[in-house]
Structures are given as structure tokens and as C-alpha cells.
Length: 62
Image 1 (cartoon, rainbow, N blue to C red):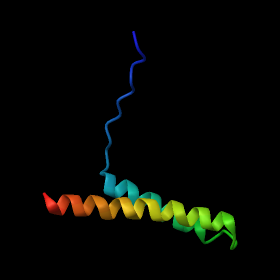
Image 2: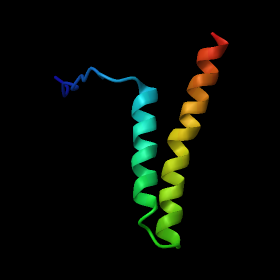
Image 3: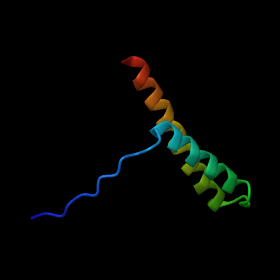
Image 4: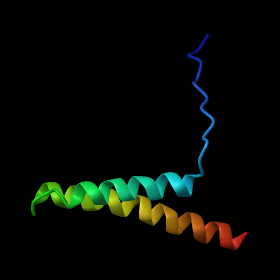
């Protein structure tokens, strides 16, 4: 028999989780000096923001 998957019921919406993650990354971003590490954090902030935009567009088209 295969491995049983863990099922987790989310208590908050995807939008709220993405916003929270982006805010957390922005707060960490202010403490980082200019350089490659800061650029990596910027990418991590942009990803959930883009996902939010896509989700909102899909929700509107329904």
C-alpha cells in the first residue's frame, strides 16, 4: 500500500496567507543590506503578489 497523504484543512483563505507572507518578507527586507541577498528577498515578495493578481483575475472572470 502507498503512503497516506496528510490532509490539512486551511483555516484562512489563500489571499490572506499570501498577503501575510508578503508582509513578512517586506519586514525582513528592510533589515537586509543592499546586495544579492536583498534581491532574493525581493523575488520572494513578488511571487505571492503575482499569485494574488492571478487569483483575483480568475475570480473576476467566473
